[in-house]
Image 1 (cartoon, helix red, strand yellow):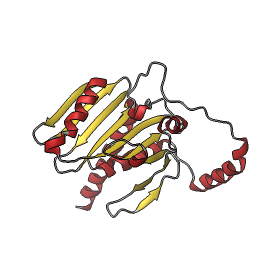
Image 2 (image 1 turned 90 degrees about the horizontal axis):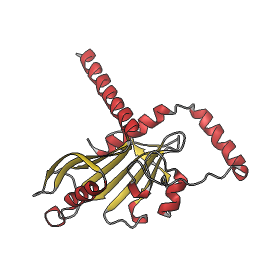
Image 3 (image 1 turned 90 degrees about the vertical axis):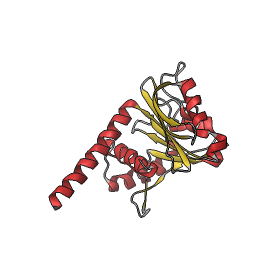
Length: 221
């Protein structure tokens, strides 16, 4: 699945978990700005003493919060702008649950962008890391990534072409999944980390959208 569609599905799913009235968002934002000096300080959460889930960028899924990300990464993630359709029409993330970081700010080779997704309680539920790929015949970046992930997490399955260095793999750690996708025709590699609950909700959302599209097609015939 194309990375933008995956991201959009995740964003829509999170928003569905926390429906709000747009007018109330503006009122709440204005009130928050007014009350900001007296707002209680949120303690950063990075990982449990003995982490249970996968830890993209050193942040434990299902536990880490935005303040923890800022502490570990040294940069403040910014609210994401997400493509909403094939024409690239963008919509801001009004609920503030999806954040992005420019890969250049993290000094991680090949990282173009990181997306961090939080639930309404502020717990990180998903992270998406988009990497560029060089000369795959020489660097074997996908194979190296699969090897690194296999040393950290339980590999559930993989479909990898070692000659052309492309494919996919799925890993499991505690209450989390890690999906690696590097299609043959793409010059990028996408790592998607999710809690199992979040992934299930996402897949159900994708299936529901597919069913609705099929129903519309059938009704149009």
